[in-house]
Amino acid sequence: MQLTSRFRIKNVNNIVDFLKETHVGRLATIDENGYPQVIPMNFVHLTTPNLDNKHTDIRNGSKKYQQWVNKDEIDKNKSNPEVSNRAYEQKYDHIIYMHSHHKGEKIDNLLRNNKVGFEVDKEICFLPSYYFHPTDASFADTLYTSIVIKGKASIVSDNEEKALAMNKMMQKYQSEGKYAKLTQESKSIIHLTVIKINVETIEGKYKIGQEWTSSFKKDIANKIIEREGISKAREILKDMKICILENGELELSSLISM
Image 1 (cartoon, rainbow, N blue to C red):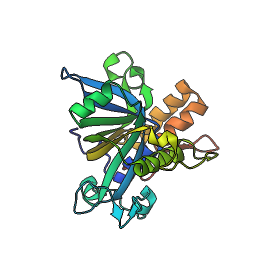
Image 2 (image 1 turned 180 degrees about the vertical axis):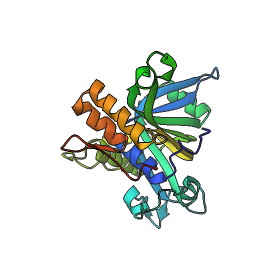
Image 3 (image 1 turned 30 degrees about the vertical axis):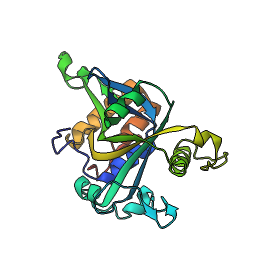
Image 4 (image 1 turned 135 degrees about the vertical axis):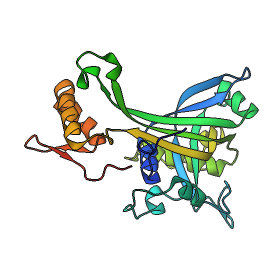
């Protein structure tokens, strides 16, 4: 994904945060006729310290997968918004896990060709053309965030790893708990098909009006409030790094770089 610098997400912590918060991604595989097949999937993203800059399962003696870490444990210093994605990738491995029916076209595809794509996005707000020009429809725009991943997929055979992945997925989707932790002996784990993507490249793009002047951004924000209503606008403007104060005034974040 070729990105201009002003739209690239430069701080990889923001990419990891977005993957943590977003529930649906799209897995792209290549079918037997060479066409891409794209399927929406639930997923969980994990990171682990990189050993010798190779994608590998972390094993510490007889204790497998004990060095998986959460994003907050990776980089507790968020003061630098210009963290290099490349430097991060050299230090940490990114893994995507998802579960699947054990048969199907996507399984056949990735077993035939394990190079896959994975995309996660969020439409923040459609901006009507008249926000920018009274009659020219070409001015219509959309605010969004998008993450594009390329990597190699495999079917996980180790039940301990499958259990770890699914427990992490449950933590993401059912954070309130109220379930028994899965183990490698769980029947559901033994018979479950888990897809693993070893990430090779990960890029992020966002468009939230970061190139606009403060006065123009406030003008668009007021138009969003008028069109969408105050309740929906609060969520939209939150993504745009704009807060609606109790007195109705708009407060722009001094730090908009991602």
